[in-house]
Length: 334
Ligand code: FES
Ligand SMILES: [Fe+2]
Image (cartoon, rainbow, N blue to C red):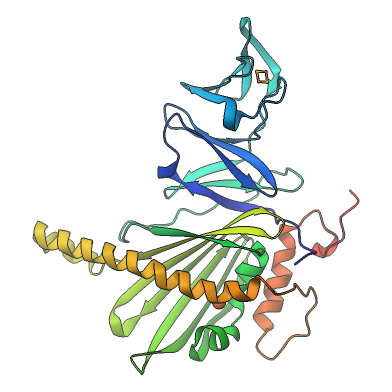
């Protein structure tokens, strides 16, 4: 763990609803403050916090004016491109004074920002997720003492499902598949529910080291769940995970035949189940957290019989540290 810096990746900063029009927020990413603001017309911007004039913190001294942001230290004002267009004496465009923006995108009701240790532009994007026939996502943040690579490794660490999460008869349905920045794997496992084994099927997709989405099916209960594990690396060994859950609304093509009252009751019941389920999901991830917080990162482990996926995952992870020699610790001289 100590060898790993923050990997280059897209990370969720916040949900859209938390960033209102005309508001400015301070977030942490990779040990630094970053400023997230939304202009009056609704455009989200993510920038370095310091005013280019004399370095005041725009998270505390900024003010949104239409599409611009003004620094209230000496009243310098920056336009939608981040170029300074006014100083303390009035209009004075000066492209040399320009705010530094991070690549960012607002998608699926979430605001993402791309972090790169070498300030490189992203070569891939977060895919749009079709969430239409799913209940509104319920979120809960977990604060951890860990690292994005460690938490994302959980998805491919098949042998821990029995020891930590009490699953049995674990079966690899689709072996780990890598497609550039995306990793996928599918497996099935039994869990005892009221003393009876229930078969769960998991389809996991990991996008960079920031976003993991698990789709879980329980055919016997006609249940489909979606779990979001959204890493927010605040700094060295300081990580928040925005956990989210959503339930698939059953038989969406039947919805048009349902009376409005019945449809509304059904939707509310599912929304209520979703809000209950986030606690179960939080509990499950917390089992892992107790391990992550004390464990040490072993860069070249002696693999056990079921660790093939972990080794493939570790190899894949190296692409997210372009500034390291072989992705293993030593800083690249260039
Ligand atoms: S430091 Fe921002 S206007 Fe002077
Ligand atoms: Fe786990």
